[in-house]
Length: 388
Ligand code: NI
Image (cartoon, rainbow, N blue to C red; front, side, top):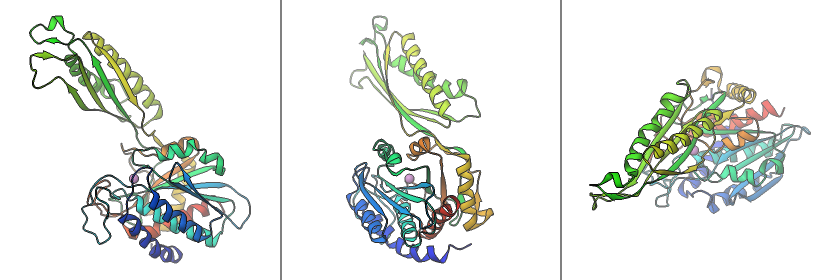
């Protein structure tokens, strides 16, 4: 099925906004140009309220329906790019060295602007739509900061919905799943302190390298021996540092290791962290060393609410038909900042087909402009589902 006439018209314009944003990528919370473009458009469309400066460069617009009072629901998109060099050779490629929209947030922003234009003009719903344009999805936790700045209470948000493009999924197709959809991503750095000494007299030292080596292996027992094999857990040690190649006859006094932990259930996330701490402490102690853990919590598990997922599926099916909506899409071990909003309010995040493109975060990636009209149609269909 093709997108609606109304969305196709707006999508033509949105394509030019998307390419404008694409040429001028900005990072994390520092999005002056992108946020200004977004706010200027939202004001021009006649939104009832346009608030800037939430979480530094976040923008929020409110549009009230003409059919009277009703629910207040939020649609959220992300605006930030990545610190990498674009290799697409497109005429509208990034003009900023080492910055690139390689995750399609330029497309998500353009879709939301297109939807805003339609909603502000049509207003054919009851209640309120709150459009949230967030900074710093790529590692900065911009969504979390918006929550800390009281986004949900300030605008009376009752439900939250998100959308992200998906390479490999046909344009005009959608995919989603109820419950956990994306992983929690936590990081760690462990400093192991022993007692340095001469390599010839190890009994007079407490070797932190041996402790670290055993620890790298022992940490693998979390996923393989302590968690249900049907529940996905990844523990990756990705960094190790200690000793000096110019002093091969010296046992160092400290070694650092670091890495990443991914889990798919909030309860598993807590259990893994607890087991992790026990293993680190006891393994270090086994070799007479001490370990200090710097645990760095990342984005939580992305959990879709079952009822809101059904609404999202119904909305997507209403525009592209049943067979182009996969309601049981596999979980992925990537993680997503929208999780914080889903922890506080019921909602759902959906994948939008980006066609046969390069993968996300790849230097050859580009958002597919043909997906814009479908994205706008999805937001409009969700309004029909939740605010009619
Ligand atoms: Ni992304």
